[in-house]
Image (cartoon, rainbow, N blue to C red; front, side):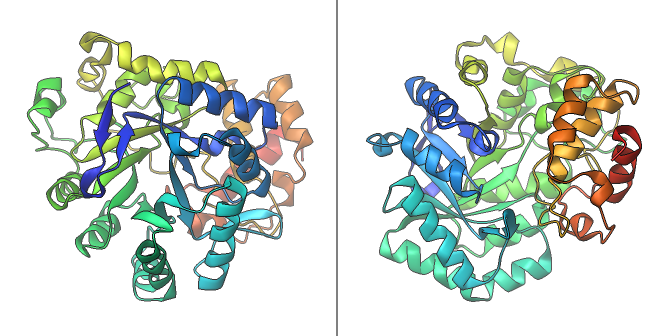
Length: 384
């Protein structure tokens, strides 16, 4: 495993990190197996944005007596209310659930305290001008968090946060689809591997290019989420480029952006950890993504569900990401849900038919997914 210094905060992090969101719902034994394999292979940074209590406890048990081997990202503003994940900007709720994080993880400090999921200008103004930021800065002053970070999917808002000078780390969604070029760009030259090795970002979507450069200039390290676009980039059927990329190509793409310290890959099994860490033993030819991207049509992940559940909370208690995942499986099968997907869908506690079409999910979604339309389609396919 190779390690990088994460910006000005000085933390040394593994190039390949673990995004722990897929550990939610697994047994303690399964969680331990994933965490154990990750640590054994040199992975040392773990992002835990999830507020669900059991997964926090399971990860805490997996890290017991090994806390010093992990750089933890814990989020300020992720809460568990009425039995589901939600974002909160109430400072007292932030305190309660951050202290819950510390307790369940069995630690008295968090390496990186993340201001959770700030994508809109109004939300940025509210957080950076209010009690939530003051609470986070107080935690950093006391050493309860060692570095202050923020997670975002919006390059304009993220850059404003970086330019405040308050952040040490930015958690940002980076993959080739998100950085797609404008229609008149010469993709075959702009996406050549040599261009990125020389640091030439001309032709990238300007706001994203400027964000990466600003982070590098100000010493703000980037940890990467969504490097595989929720798996969409790994299949010919779902890749916007018409051809699948490999995990190594996606990881390499993210690692070649300025200021990136670690690429956090979501894993549910030890074998998936192995596949992610295999990046470190790949040849340069195996890492090279230019052959795929140089022939890519213009495409954007706008409107495509990433299964992140940032659309929650749902007043009908629908697990929107799960419904979306089973819907997409069915759509790949010409609208006929495979028996396994239909069975998993049926076992959900709430279904697309329970949607009241309030559209709060659409207002929350960072990718502007037409959730209500997808709920209607899922209801048609699955019958409930």
